[in-house]
Image (cartoon, rainbow, N blue to C red; front, side, top):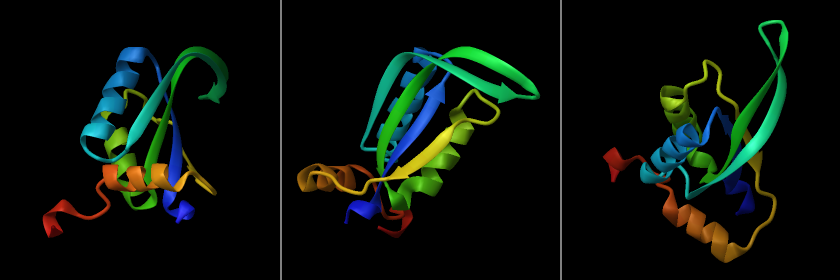
Length: 113
């Protein structure tokens, strides 16, 4: 059961962008919850140069069946050319919480319901 759930790590350039992404994912039932952690610093290589930028970290909880749709939505609304989308499997968790995640995200195609 736990392997059905994912934690996604995403970054955004600022809190406003992070809030828009988080709200969209939850409203569209692609994520049950998205935490926004401001004040991170990212150091990375981009286009041959080492960059250092202030960013905001988003942590989203979702179901494995929503990953493809979630990625498509993030790519459509994210301001970055290549947004960070890292999915980590949930290997254990409180059953009641995981059930809530499953109930909060839409795991079936709404057109088939």
